Amino acid sequence: MQVKLNTIVAAAMVMVGGASYAQDMVVKIGHVGPTSGGIAHLGKDNENGAKMAIEELNAKGTMIGGKKVKFELVPEDDAGDPKQGTSVAQKLVDSKVAGVIGHLNSGTTIPASKIYSDAGIPQISPSATNPKYTRQGFKTAFRVVADDVHLGSTLGKYAVKELKGKSIAVIDDRTAYGQGVAEEFTKAVKANGGAIAETQFTTDKATDFTAILTQIKAKKPDLVFFGGMDAVAGPMIRQMKQLGITAKFMGGDGICSGELPKLAGGAMADGQVVCAEAGGVEGEQKIGMEKFRADYKKKFGIDVQVYAPYVYDATNVMVAAMVKAGSADPKVYLPVLAKTDGYKGVTGIISFDDKGDVKNGALTLFTYKGDKRDQIAVVR
Image (tube, rainbow, N blue to C red):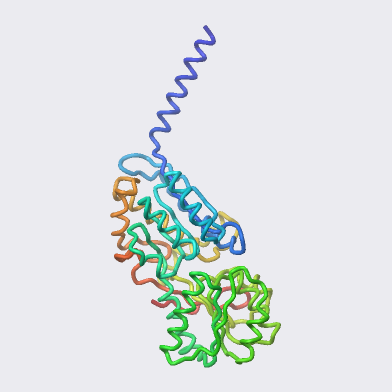
């Protein structure tokens, strides 16, 4: 009799547990970034931004179509490698995620975007800036940052007009991001009456730049532009100092991290480096960004690197579309996501154009003083 009673109690508990579980609709959201390799600190920063958004959405009891939702983050590592990027993209499709936030690099975002498009799964990149990403005609591709055309052209104009660069050298790492931003920078330098004295190439895995920097030194540049990421830029700045090159050093959002001074090993002079981060807030909007940065530091014990706020916003924009559509089914909420207009995020106002690009994207120019980033200006 006792055995039978225990069985009945156990069955009742399963029923109660099942009823409780049934009340919460589980929605999986994928996140992809390089959480291993040379820029793992940036990938982890992105993943942390997604974690913050998901935990807050669950804590406030988000409802979709009259049902309480439990969001589950499905994190994947693409190591900044295009082949691994497509592999994890397929893995997320197979695991039936409702949407994907990522990837970080343009070189992984672009090939992965076809896989998401074929599956009809919305993808919002918080950081991929190569224009090609949103110009493939995929209805599922979105981004919340300005692209390389805007980034490179702004930096090129600034190099000539503000920094008075007369002898400019350009180096890129041959990735989709690095090459793209360097090409746009070069175009803008020439359009503003400047000249490129030397062009060199490296890779995103290189650590020794003596040969290319020696060739650059012979041209006596007053400014060196690098298209690539901070993990390569840091050692490059260090080796420039060793070779006696005192030129200004410029780059896009890939180098514009809190980690750069450490990666440069103390070789950066105050004001020597100028970089631009896609995005930027001014006036009252600064309050929201400052709160986010403080909350992030309290939660993870470290400062924001670059993109965590954009990941946070991208996740919330995706969920806002689900809520508005009353469904987490990609087919149902995708058209609503595409019409996102005037969403107030910590990175500013987010509205998408017909390609999936953020409208009126801002850029923030920074330099470094005393190993800390120092804002120069927000430009649009």
